[in-house]
Length: 172
Image 1 (tube, one colour):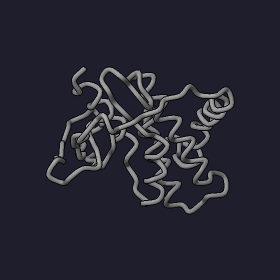
Image 2 (tube, rainbow, N blue to C red; image 1 turned 180 degrees about the vertical axis):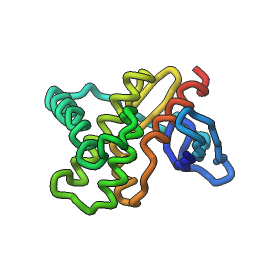
Image 3 (tube, helix red, strand yellow; image 1 turned 90 degrees about the vertical axis):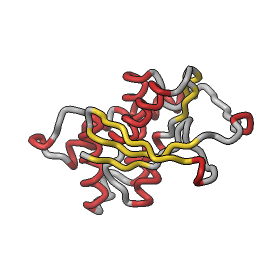
């Protein structure tokens, strides 16, 4: 499977086109191509990281528990791979094409898929949103919102693999 992703991580930024390069990596999920660039002036890249509130933690837990139901609603048992990210890619594609937004609204999907992607990144990479060493940024909820707006599919595994690659190759 080949994925092409434009992603904003530590190494990507809104900068001049000359500063960007296309990177293709081989992953267990297939070939992934993404755009990479340097942050022009990292001192101007101001982050404010805060602890989640108890209410936000409850909401994330609630949405994380809906992942199985979301996948089951759109991917038959015989088509599931057992890899939550691959199954989410299939479910997202089926949901987007179905036009069925009654049981799962766009906001539901952003929360469910964003939580699943973030949780997977925490479990396997030790990062969901921010890592200091190596300095890395990921935006799972925003990434899902953009794909809904653009009606783009087959991105969940690619986002994770790109984050994984960035975590492994960025200087500590």
